[in-house]
Length: 158
Image 1 (cartoon, helix red, strand yellow):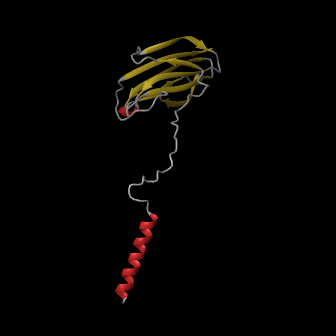
Image 2 (cartoon, helix red, strand yellow; image 1 turned 45 degrees about the vertical axis):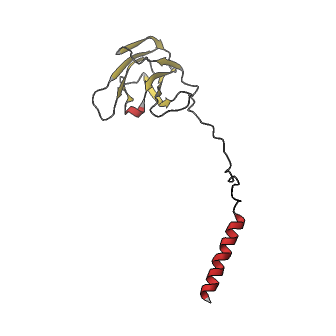
Image 3 (tube, one colour; image 1 turned 90 degrees about the vertical axis):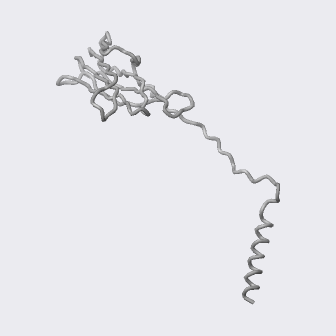
């Protein structure tokens, strides 16, 4: 008797499952599609004067002009963090700094991102006091002592 009631219960469950499933050959019910718009990092509008440093630039670059106090300027360099290399900055100033680092960010091009793709590293500075400063940027892996590229910028503030 128990066996018969168990068999009837299983048969009833199978019947319910067959009735509620789509007919054979019917297309499956598609999940709703959600459109995803890729976002990119948009550079801030307050980069000030942008100084683009070419990939094969000379070791020392004199900017050739003095910035007025309060001027915001950015140094732009190509960087590919997937290689382990990154730009590391050292700012040499006197007792009263002529230039201060405001921030740094990495911006990728407005194209479909691909693995291993590089971007542009921006170092944003502000001229704060009259004098001069030397900005040294080294392209290296943080755990290695020797950079593969080094750029030194001489900045004057009036």
